[in-house]
Amino acid sequence: MSTETSSTKKSGGFADIKKMFGGGQSNLRQFGILGSLILIIVVFQIWTNGLTLSPTNLINVVNQYSYILILAIGMVMVIIAGHIDLSVGSVAAFTGIVVAKAMADWNLPWPLAIVLGLVVGAAIGAWQGFWVAYIGVPAFIVTLAGMLIFRGGNQFIGQSTSVAVPPEFTFIGAGYIPDFGPFPFSTGTMILGVLGAAWIVYNEWHIRRVQKKMGSESSPVWVSVVKVVLLAGVILVAAWLFATGRVGTSFPISGIILVALVILYSFITRSTIGGRHIYAVGGNRLAATLSGVKDRRVDFFVMMNMSVLASLAGMIFVARSTASGPQDGNGWELDAIASVFIGGAAVSGGIGTVIGSIVGGLVMAFLNNGLQLIGAGADLVQIIKGLVLLIAVGVDVWSKRQGRPSILGIWSQRRKARAVADEPVLESSGTVLPTNDNASAESLRH
Image (cartoon, rainbow, N blue to C red; front, side, top):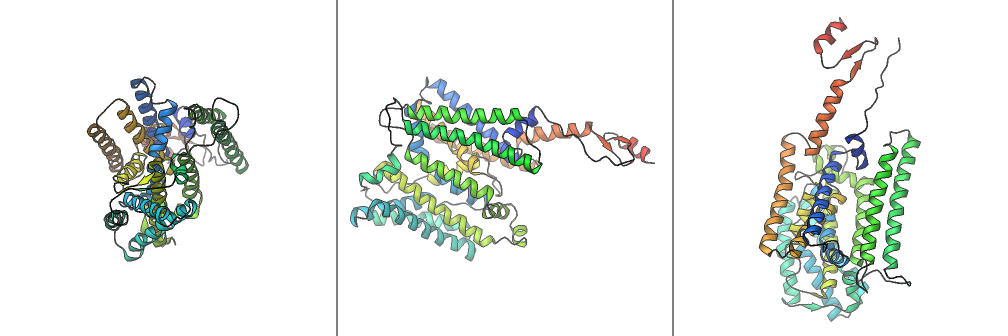
């Protein structure tokens, strides 16, 4: 009698919903964070009588928090690798004052000033990365020193005063997609939204096509349809809201920069060898090193990359503020770190995604914005943000002590265990052995 080795995999219900958002536990945790973001938006939308999702407020949220979200993109890579960077706010402020002084005193054209800012960020990152990767000083100490050094450098170069930037430079922080056409909304923003929705449709079709070609298991068609409809619908609705703001506004240029960086770094972390090395080093440095991963290069890269993004965030903030000042960047590192941990990154490293960090940053952004809209004081805002961060990290630590990656993972693992217990085990003789009765199984074998 031939040996039967195949078994039918169960699907439907929660299993198919998991496929809609990815099957991994990290994705499931981010699904829970996404649910929290939706809940926060709905609560404040009702509480503020519709102000939260008004076009003007959404534009303000992007303008006010785009630089924090840019910092979160770099910070998640640092944390995945097992480090932390406390200097990003000071690096952003230092770069901002250098760029502002270069344009004000040296008459440097604004495009060259942006290049100068990125070079300054890369030099700072290389300096800190050298100490972390090749000297072996913990990143916490190196960046704590950097926080003090570059904060002092900002005040020394700027003499603790504000330095204005030219109007052309403000475009990257306070500009909008140019408007054209006879329509009573921003045509450019709507075109961008349609392109985004079309990409969602194409990407899902391409994934299913590749899965079919390779013979791998695909999610049910209805899962793909619901996923595409939801994501494309959200993009189109958001584009409409941004496009119908007050005259002269549309989707901010800082938002365009943020979206481009999210796409780029999502690709780097998920689809490149270097990106996988970052996860390998953060997950198990010794095993990664024994497997041939150059852990020093990884450490150097994530630290330098973080400072480059911090310099970009600093320039965007200065452009929006129209001047660089001595208080720029205060507390930015805390908001970026909070965004990463709320977005599902693990305290011990090795786990986290760019998308999750952006969602975590949006949770903080809409929470902060909503509290401001209802007139909450700055003290209450800080208390609530601190509690949200504490709870997010506490859940992560508690879950790992239980040996499970997330609360959703607990439920899904128990469900899988019950399903396995109900399935028969097929022996080579063709005899069906019930898995939940070891004694009966043993007697049948003999």
